[in-house]
Image (cartoon, rainbow, N blue to C red; front, side):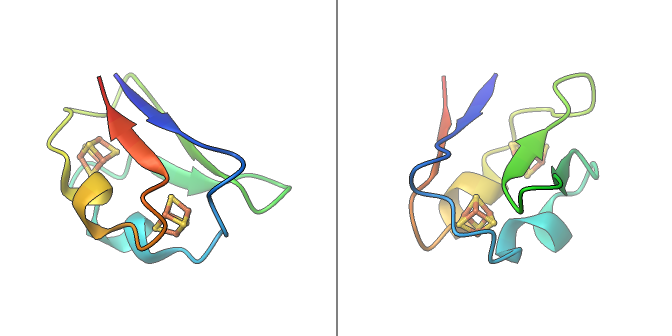
Length: 57
Ligand code: SF4
Ligand code: SF4
């Protein structure tokens, strides 16, 4: 399961297009949220995030 830090995420959107499973979306507050039912924990988003806001457990 991945975790996205609301404090660190700037809503830049870098991770959204990189996710091969379309599991990431910005919510109404421009904060990134993950759909756990789609995420395969590939870690592509975590490696790409410039803020290191995404961690994979
Ligand atoms: S790349 Fe990082 S900072 Fe940018 S929207 Fe995604 S989680 Fe937030
Ligand atoms: S770990 Fe992979 S599948 Fe899950 S949200 Fe990030 S890029 Fe998408």
